[in-house]
Length: 163
Ligand SMILES: Nc1ncnc2c1ncn2[C@@H]1O[C@H](COP(=O)(O)OP(=O)(O)OP(=O)(O)O)[C@@H](O)[C@H]1O
Ligand SMILES: [Mg+2]
Image (cartoon, rainbow, N blue to C red):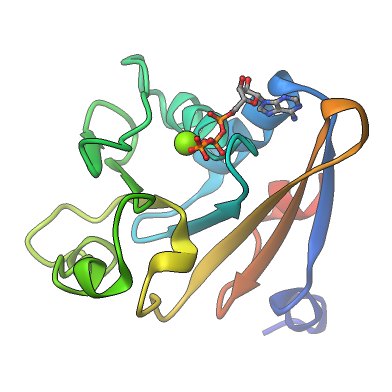
């Protein structure tokens, strides 16, 4: 492993997101560069932009179908893109309910085609994947947002690191 890669492993990236377009654009860049089996764990207050980011990821994967929040359906699967996208929203669940769902089959690719797993309200996960990208969305001044990207046991892609 290169020295530069090591220093990126546990680095925190902060990205200013001026508007909805900026959030979408970050998602698109992720969607274009993520590899099969990637898990994106999204955290952030109500309305912080989690679904918007996943909509961008869908675009970046080449998914034309519109991505809607799976708050009531729990999980939405999109299979028409470069990789399958599994979009989860745990808002309505307690950690013990989440535990019963065996969500690890998604990021371990057991009985599902390995793809991208994007989880809204990931703080409700009682267990985490071995490696994942944590994305924390927070509110800034004037209705803007900020994204904090923290890779756990993985490296950010060149394109993301260059943002
Ligand atoms: N960077 C941004 N600046 C301003 N508004 C934004 C930004 N990103 C997204 N939004 C807007 O914020 C609103 C809420 O976004 P979104 O539904 O993606 O949030 P969420 O975190 O998924 O919400 P929930 O907690 O309900 O799941 C949308 O109207 C979206 O267009
Ligand atoms: Mg949402």
